[in-house]
Image 1 (spheres, rainbow, N blue to C red):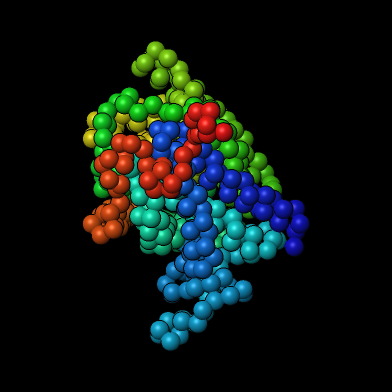
Image 2 (tube, rainbow, N blue to C red):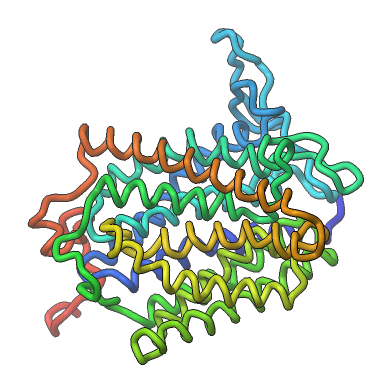
Length: 422
């Protein structure tokens, strides 16, 4: 084994795992003080549940041999004989990633992607979701949406720099998605939109009704997300090489430009550039550069970041115009940012972009792949969320939502106020 690549993959796995607690801080700071525990627990609950499901069968679904058989387990380590069901007794014939490092390093790296994708959705239902119902949704959505979509996008084999086998989005369509613009961000954004529709609006929903209760907590979350995102993007090369370096510098430059773009829009719209806007702009840039980080020169990475920051700053008002309560702007940042970054490759991507004389074929394939994931995730999330709401109930009682749901759902408070509370 190459100890350098092994260390690189394992370190990047740890960095991406850190993004989920970072997301919990980012989301937690933006909700009411009496629902911050609930908000953060949606991320930590996702971490616990999806990590277990990934090891049991998620990796097997995402990286099976073509995704046509039902597999359980990790190839070479453990599996359940399914022959009594008339299914293949083989466990996952996992994709063998480039670079000499242990297979379980790749299993761990991809597990962190599954975890953060599910956690991202929770921002659309802040202040009003039952924890148990969320966990049911997370498990079902990961099983029928994320694991298959990861197979479509991330499961492929390269030969001479070309995809020769794998999931239909990357192999058949030829979509370029280096680190998950479709499988992670568009996927999560579409599901967030579906849940926002199912759960309905928060009481008193209107522009400016709910202000972040803890701005420093949110900025801490942004810092942890940005730090972990270097592992997310550069780590997707699975080797410490020149391509990882390109992804790394784009992960620095694009969100920095996006931060400036968001602040420019804020200044023109509201007369003030806010710290929440700076953090949100950085996240929007990170989202947009994710699929394109290895396909753009840094100057075009910054152009993408600037465009994404400005468009996402405008897109967050869609919820007021269209009447859905996407509490923490999962749609405006992740769905819109993921689409912008995915399509940008078809125009300015190295060796494929229409702006460089390569025609519009790649753009069309990027759009088709993004649209397929969007529709698939939205429809299934809508169905799963509707069934949960009509059976066990997804939304807390009105009086609990108004009072703050931390003590009702978790029996805890984020802050102890008063001298008698220590």
